[in-house]
Length: 75
Image 1 (cartoon, rainbow, N blue to C red):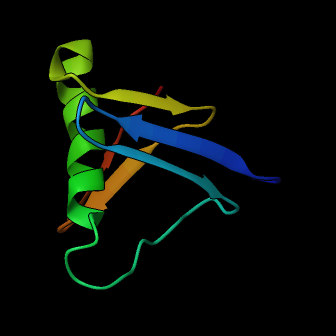
Image 2: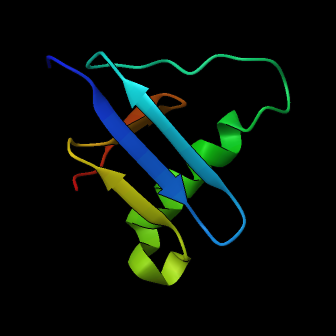
């Protein structure tokens, strides 16, 4: 993957908007900064679609890697 890609994940309360510059992005930060909430919102979007109340905008495939397994979601 070359270039940068904008991602927006939002619901009626929160909005995350950021750019990534790599194929795989690891999100690290201090406690209570919203990392788990962001991943939960992405997972909820793919499990329940628009009924989840979450909107995801991204021009590439988004995936969640957690625990021992890899769950791939496509846009």
